[in-house]
Figure 1 (cartoon, one colour):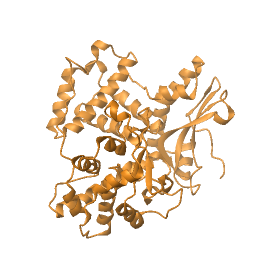
Figure 2: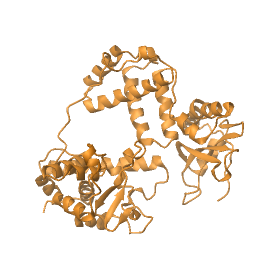
Figure 3: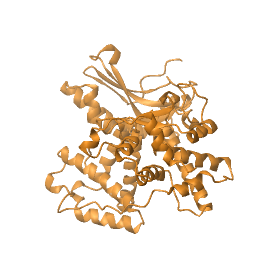
Figure 4: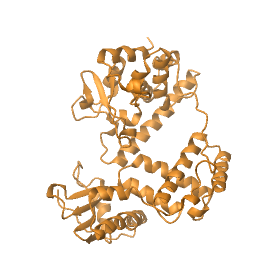
Length: 424
């Protein structure tokens, strides 16, 4: 492939042996002209040659034509919006963080990664935007969506800039009442308020606000905890779902994916759609939960036996079995984390839509992909399966010291326990 232009408008910095540049990464593209991710390429002259550069995603992908239009300063509305977003990310996050470390002579890629996760602005909304940009830069796309949703909710509540000093227990109570009047579930309300608390924690830790102004905690604002909904299905209801005569191939595929998730230790769709045939060893799938892989020190490997019903679903809807192939085909054409997240979201939305058609026809309660994990754990618990096994199967750390001493269950035991989930 021919070499791309390297320097793009103002998005370039070079001082103290550190260079920042934006580049279009075509390495994994099937076709040079296709949409490829734009990334910040950060080069450190003093680093070892084989590790002297690192890439951070911008969250933007452009095909060759639009990339050239961007470099040439096109005035098309779509290109202007992309250029503005990239410029904001560069000016507010990337350049100041790199420059600060470079000027102090303390630049390392590890130090930069740490700095990029602690972006704090002068007010609440600006801090949200900086946090979102830093999460995108670190490929934390799922977390960035939570912050984006919270920011949209805050902007609907108050369109003006909000100083940190305005975030008082009284302000938080008013915001909570606003969300309640909008009909939001307490799980959503709690998520939005915890996200605000995370921003306030960053502000406090970076001395933007004092401990006296911090509005959360005992004697101040307490984040509400809603009562949990009944999310587990009974095995007789799962039997009805599994044996339902689906009126279309789409509904059948979504029903089968739901059943696969339930039987596969309740694994979430984000993990299942990333499974590859190389993850299968001796008839079992080995994986780590992506949700906790980057946030916990101890990585717990999950092992799920492939029951005949699961193999049947793989044979019906899966890719041809090659080592590098995904088990299911939904991510075949994805190249960036943003594309992965978008496609996973689309599959989850499609599944939720169609599994509700199944339960509606069967006159069962509405369910979604969330019910798979709860059904897996609840059914096994009711059948007196050891809690230590359920912990291992779902990737939970042992809840007691005693259970921490219990070794891994073997394949025979895993098949025996998971077979209890079957409805036949």
